[in-house]
Length: 181
Image (cartoon, helix red, strand yellow):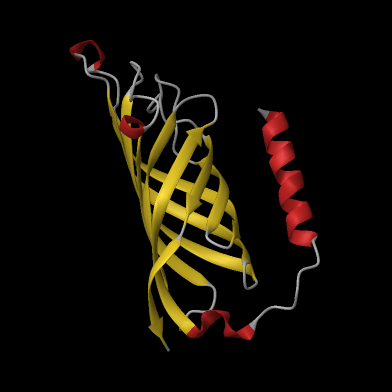
């Protein structure tokens, strides 16, 4: 686990220190509504898939807002007996490096997590919780790679046992509507 964290931190530092072309002033000329698929991997547990909706207003230079939904019903639970779980997430992102086709962001996520154990045997185990997570994100054109940490997680006896703390996420933000300034 520590190897993954160190490797990701190293890659992140290298990417942010690479000399890129000068920042383009015309990046924020339009408000943009984007949608796309996401693939989420909890480190040590399940794959989940879903979608995102993202809005970047032109009047706030480096902020964007979004909604994400991902579920193991479209991932690990498709052809196995993996626990079915769902994530509903609202987020706000701050882009601290912004170039024409490259962005580095820090993202704050807040949402709701639900796990369907499908048996009355597990009725005394918590199966839902509010979530709060922080992500570091690198975007190249429409592609996005993030590494996140869930502040609210558990081990089964204290909190939800299927909400692991660390995760990776790959997504695409495909612009569907651009609003001119």
